[in-house]
Length: 202
Image 1 (tube, rainbow, N blue to C red):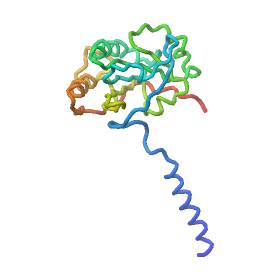
Image 2: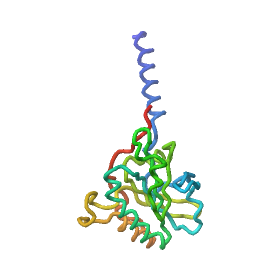
Image 3: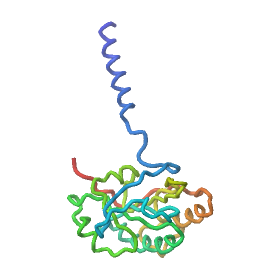
Image 4: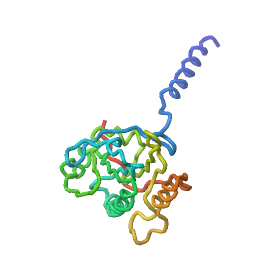
């Protein structure tokens, strides 16, 4: 029995340490305050959330050049900016993919896009990890509360990733209607559908 005690103690310590060092959450949840970032835009300038003092919030979307889902949603992302930027919620697009894994998502390749909103490169992938983004596209609506930006919606743009004409439920637009009316989004989280983010190889 005495010999078993050190073994039991060791097992308990290992079990305890596994809980201690496990991440508390996989990125932001609805209601969390989003930390600001400073990432390089395709025009070479650094962009942060704090730059736009007039913004009532942001539509932050993790996307890329190469993913078929991102391509299918490109016009819909542009349309979100056209609709909501004048109302104080501009789009900020972020490419989290490692170009060593997806060469078509290099910074040079990103420059071919001519968006009316920032298209930023997340070179370290730390912003994508902080948000908990896993797909392209993966969308987050942030609402300004004082000096903070609070996550108010997470997930997909709508319910049809293949054909915009076949969309039945526009998740983001429905959420935005409620958020801009000062209400919480009744559907504040959906499953993002898209390609997996191309993480850096260990």
